Image (cartoon, rainbow, N blue to C red; front, side, top):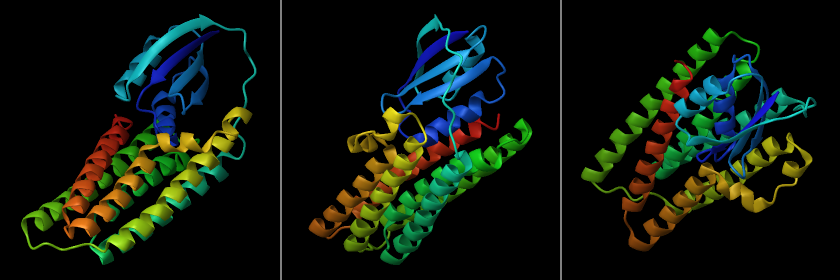
Amino acid sequence: MQKSIFKITKMDCPSEETLIRMKLDGISSIVNLEFDIPNRKLTIFHIGDIQQIEKSIVELKLGGKKLATEQTNQINFKETKNQKTILWSVLLINFTFFIIEMTTGLVSKSMGLVADSLDMLADSFVYGISLFAVGGTLIRKKRIANLAGYFQIILAVIGFAEVLRRFFGSEQIPDFSTMIIVSVFALIANGICLYILQKSKSKEEAHMKASMIFTSNDVIINLGVIIAGILVNLFSSNKPDLIIGTIVFVLVIQGAFRILKLGK
């Protein structure tokens, strides 16, 4: 058996892990996958040629690059226990905050919160795909991925249209305090999700330092909304909110196209 190590530069959080697992599902030569999210590395234990595996990883456009391939005698692998329970936990957390951020974003007139809520929804889609497609056929998985991807794009486009309307129309100052408070709680929620997912891995990853949480794009987005809220208050302008909203909508669409690739 062989062991190939890949560097995945854009593997920032467990949602990318789920996408990679979905993409590689069905390749019979793969024996086991080991993810090291903090160091953005993926170790694949496989039999035979690595060409098909490498091609699939490159197609995801996550910055995947093979570092090395070597022979290994390892035959025992650690299994993830209670996988469904873990996936349900992170899905419910993300979907709950999708509802909270969408609602508070609309009420407070913050496009940053609305956009961040869609990012939460995108993560919910990823975990949902993994959950509901477990044991299902490849065709079923592709259909779910396509549905999730297109729905996500539609919501992001609607969000873009609203950003443009507010940018060129009358200025609506969002409630900066709501932006900051809700984003702080979303930041905590993302940290909890990452902790729950990493707790299911090896002992070393279960005791990962808190600083590793901040490698997540979701956390960076939360910080961006918090900063935007502060700038809204300082300058009495909605422009910081619209800017962060636009950035997040772009990230949401990129994530949607990534999901759609699983449907091909």
